[in-house]
Image (cartoon, rainbow, N blue to C red; front, side):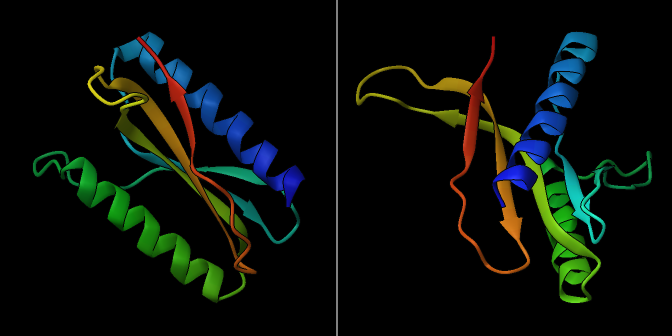
Length: 117
């Protein structure tokens, strides 16, 4: 599991970094590990005329990945999205992107947070 966690984080971190450098924004996206152990990117397809909210995109990606894992097509997936994290009470929140990883076997992995400016 550690290898897959590392591969999802590496892929997601690099893509998030590119998005932030190129556009100054981050929209939710994913990465998954197929049955052969290869990492692949994953984005939500939507109609440009009806832009979904970030929550709708995240929920759509999660639903798709859960369905694919239940079919045995994915070993793991990670969803990347923006999150504000308050490290100390009374202090301002940090802007981060979170990488939330799930495994088909139910293994637990903490959510990883990466601050950015």
